[in-house]
Amino acid sequence: MDKLLRLLFILFLITLPTLVLGDCTCDKDDGDRDKNKALRYKIAAIVAILAGGAIGVCIPILGKTIPALHPEKNVFFIIKAFAAGVILATGFIHVLPDAFENLTSPCLNENPWGNFPFTGFVAMVSAIGTLMVDACATSYYSRSHFKKAQQAVGDEEKAGEHEGHVHVHTHATHGHAHGSASSAEEMGSAELIRHRVISQVLELGIVVHSVIIGISLGTSESPKTIKPLVAALTFHQFFEGMGLGGCIAQAKFKLRAAAIMALFFSLTTPVGIAIGIGISNVYDENSSTALIVEGIFNAASAGILIYMALVDLLAADFMNPRMQGNGRLQVGANISLLVGAGCMSLLAKWA
Picture (cartoon, rainbow, N blue to C red):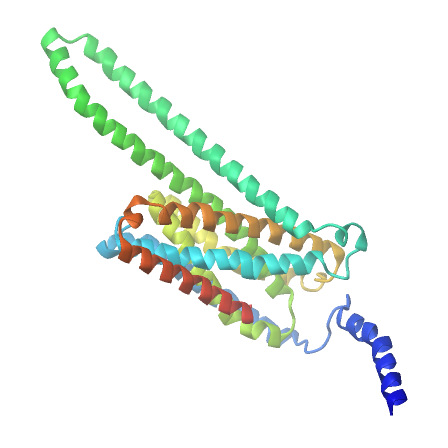
């Protein structure tokens, strides 16, 4: 009996590597392929994801017309914390694991892909690059605004020199109050510039990730794979849209610029799906080129999203004196953050 058990154990050890390798195939999975049915699901996905993304991004932007949803109100902090939780979970739970899966695939050569943690490295470089772009863009726009303000003040002073002594005296008296007002204006302008940079960099990170998931869905020809993704990705885009829409609302873009940003976000995943449908006959998701390109872009997108969520969204709001001085708002924002991150993490079960 012992000999039989030993023999079975040895056979198990011998066959185990074969079983494991059998799961890691680089060939296309031809099982459960139905092009016509898959195409119907893809068209439904384009419509549903487009609608979900558009509604999500428009709620905070159009919410400016509702007094309770103004960026200055406490409710907006809670909504923004929820959205930041969604974006953070997108980076950690959805995008980064996909990048690890792509760049550690057995379909890639062991050298160099198996000898160095490229996913973590690309995500780190992406986060550092986002910090640099963030800082440089804010600095550039601030200097540009400051020069314009100085030029305007200089023009006013030159005009004042041609006036009488009495006018100069009254202008000087008025100048102190005007200086205080302009200093408050400058602070408001600096904050506005910051919000505009944040919204544009955040959209870049989301767009890269959205196009990739759209192409992945568009190239799939398995109805069983696509069906659960339709609902999951619709909610995914809706929540991401809320996060981006909140940043656009705070940035106070003109209507045309806000509409372009919202439209651009809404179209990225549907356009990705359309591209995927177009290249589905020639695209091989297990080819080394596809794995490397997807893996690097996913890792870069994850770095951007994680940095933006932690530094520009959560840290900026949670360290805000208004939230620091309001215990109820702090509790509400923390709960909202956990709910947002939890909802988005749960979606990882299907997408």
